Image 1 (cartoon, rainbow, N blue to C red):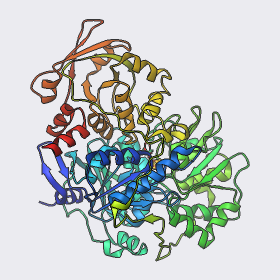
Image 2 (spheres, rainbow, N blue to C red; image 1 turned 60 degrees about the vertical axis):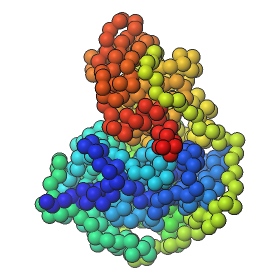
Image 3 (cartoon, protein in one colour; image 1 turned 135 degrees about the vertical axis):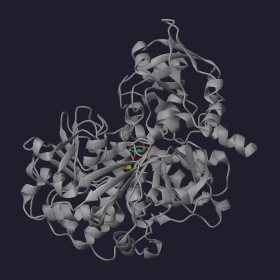
Image 4 (cartoon, protein in one colour; image 1 turned 30 degrees about the horizontal axis):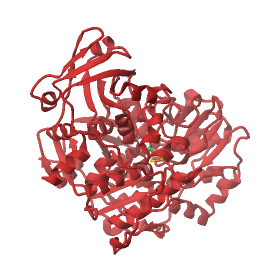
Length: 639
Ligand code: MIC
Ligand code: SF4
């Protein structure tokens, strides 16, 4: 039976299998600082002396704006922990985790679990790379397999080639247009067809990166000659092996895209699937342009940008910033002179880090139109609530920066010819190896590093106040905002809990604490976006015990279970019948978790019986009964 590439890699990694799930052996893990501090506190709590993976690496790229001691304390802690437990440490300034991982560590055919939702970027090099909460990554570092619901495999057949000025970003925006931000849940997107050959590894990675915005478990490209060329340029040809789907492999669903018919596109505010053609926006004023992020900051992207900028100046009314994806990219731009073109054109050069993508600086002005090559444009994520953020390719972004308004980049004339060198600049001196003698490492913990909050075993009865009634597609940025002010508190749950849902209801935290035990009511795709487990952990700390929604985003649903919060499925009628402020009593929770009885749920204000179900895998049942994954792991270790 011919197999898909996804099937082949998954089968190579199955540690055990149930009718609903695969538990996968994880070869590599990555963390970034904003999720990493918690993940390593959790790894410490598991109590092992060394990580059990083939490779684990800790990147620092999110919290690099050091406006107080907090981030610097976290960096120190991460560096010591890495040294002690057998983890590589990529220092701040070395680049964005996904870009650096692709350049220096990704290996075709391997599995990668990362505490960042854009970990699937690694699919660009032929990995099954999956984003997860920090606790799941801690468990993987401890050698435990990682479970995923058996995915549907979607074959995305790319035909023909892109026209000039149309780029990889437009391919994934087209997929988002067709599939939407919830259409990828439970699926792995496997790219095939003759169009694949014309895309370089970083271009493929732009596409797999934004598979996260589809809600997909992962996205993957074959490992072919293009992959070999990329690895050879990185001095890692020995990591290459050919990998592709068998001829005649059958996919659960198929999407066909004729690349030659694509046009430059944009995702309009405030969702990555709100897609229009650039031509429909033409002429609208643009106040800010930012190029960078793990989606579009490779050498090729920035060489193209530099060559368009050469000899030109940014529009006087447009603020323009560029954050190269890695130190390698930045150094190579500096060496070949492209950086001078960028600087001369008036761009502000930002650190090789996430920066404005996660609201760390460069918040646009009030009511601004901001064009970004990033992957998320959720309301308020830029740091300015009234800003309108559009997501585009670097081609569109640079054209807008020069003209000061939306413009189809095809109006700029001939597309620049970019030839990339056969060998890239390799300097791993900012990647620190772990200590040979871990016993000698002392872990410094600044005052920002607070112990993990705990939760006891699951209760059988709950009396919950409905703290909020929300709509579809609530993001983890809505639940637990990021940005320069809040991100530094990621290792301090008490402090960060004050900001839970603060963009929606500034009194939420105080109110939830007062209510003692509460729940959230929502519609579809609750918890889309980031992998931040703080969006479950901080609500748990405030007494949130259940979320009642029509459906959940994959990573957030796992995070809820990992922290002992019940993910309860409701129908539209129940949603309509329950109001904010209502009290819901849940009874027979434990048998309901076991699947042995129905969950008994009542709205005590109206007396109405509510239609609520909990659908769980065997493993999830055990975790929830223990009150979360950490308790579960400890109970396993105790035997
Ligand atoms: C993001 O893009 O939202 C982040 C910041 O990278 C998050 C992780 C985090 O919240 O720390 C992600 O995508 O998982
Ligand atoms: Fe960083 Fe933005 Fe990528 Fe998240 S999406 S890892 S914040 S660059």
